[in-house]
Image 1: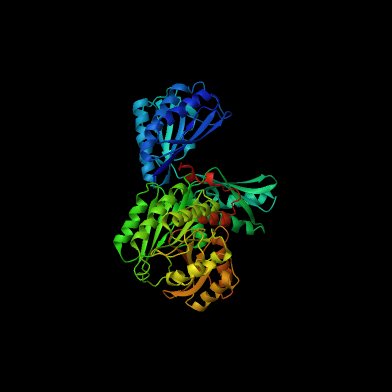
Image 2: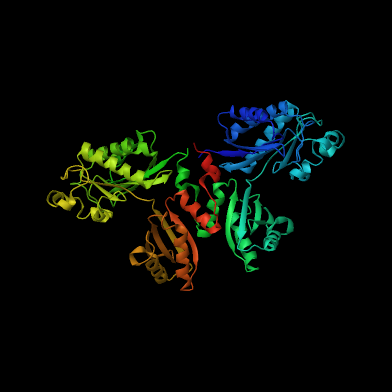
Length: 296
Length: 296
């Protein structure tokens, strides 16, 4: 079975296609890396690349992409709605198949060291790769954005980067880390009463006392109440537990789950885990799934 | 995504390793074919090979395997508990990924024609590839075994093969066809009363009025009542519907499902279907599963 890591670098460019082409070209020059998707947002002036590759192939490809972005994006000229501190703003490594979180943390550190030392770009490690609790959350690391960090990095010892100089050039700083795959998952209720969706969202989300790896909002979408969620670590807060808790909370209001939907991609394991849980399968192993035996 | 067909040929040899080695060698001489498993049974004097390959690679590999078996196995000398009519007894093609049942039926016919014409072995098409209703079931095609068929094939027009001569040599006849993947699935109940398992098995199996693609027995296994099942077409009688029907029938006796288990392999799609059903996912498509985008 081929080992796979996903990486989702965010670049502070969503308007100039030639810049994105150059970054994509830097990625594609590494044959073992597959560029699955580029999501470009002109308002945010930001683009999100989705790459997958065996772990050993990722660091050189990302190094080249970051180097290319640094040469073409000047943060002093960058305007956009989305908060950012660097040309390459955030680089999360995500374990997908046959790879541990620890290996992804090691990749983040390896890339961070090279970017800091060889490109002279300050690097902050975040999420699971963070070296301090106050750097776990991206929003905390990005506080003040490029403009604010420019002064603080030189004057405030707490903002000293994990790698690279304590000084911002036009490419800014880059936040590199490791996190579990994110699942964007929405549940529709058989009611048009958005208050029910809001109450359920509040009950199940981490910030209000709910499940640890759940972010949730209640919305009205096409006349239906929707619980809109981000599941930030399905290995520890699995999708089946989330939907069953939504179901239980909905029953409190005499409401049922009408359907659910994924936004974007989901790791196969999240669905396999759900099947095994509902079917009460006690002996499911990866080798029993026929397709898993087809890949070398 | 690589297209995959599984093929599970049964050979009438379970005692002489050198014969199985020769057949395995014939399969392995085709680089695109993977031999996943050989299950050898000395009492049955029979072995089951599990092969997977892109559809275009399978027919030549099986032709060579059947030719090798015909040269080394003499049905006049073969003794074993399992019913059989040929050196290569049964050859089912099973669609696994990106392949339709119709394509598997076409593979069965192509292989059947070559085996009949080039090797002079009578071939009967069965299951989904059957040319007559009375040849759908393997047991009907194998009636009388090698010894009985030897006379009948020459005297009874109803037993004329689909391909090849109406005359049996020492290699006997071969039954070739296409079927859905088979899932061997057992559900354990929280009771030691085997009568409950037997009553549930009777309620859910096709032969007594239950679900069409379910065979079931009630057994006592390690002191637990077990509903032991073969699901013969999970695309039409899905695994989640089976376990939920078991649950409903069990409730009639005040009994619950304690756990379930797979025996052997399961196609990934059967688990994905179960996850989507329980999670009420209305928009799941193959491209949304990350791993499906990794395979060329």
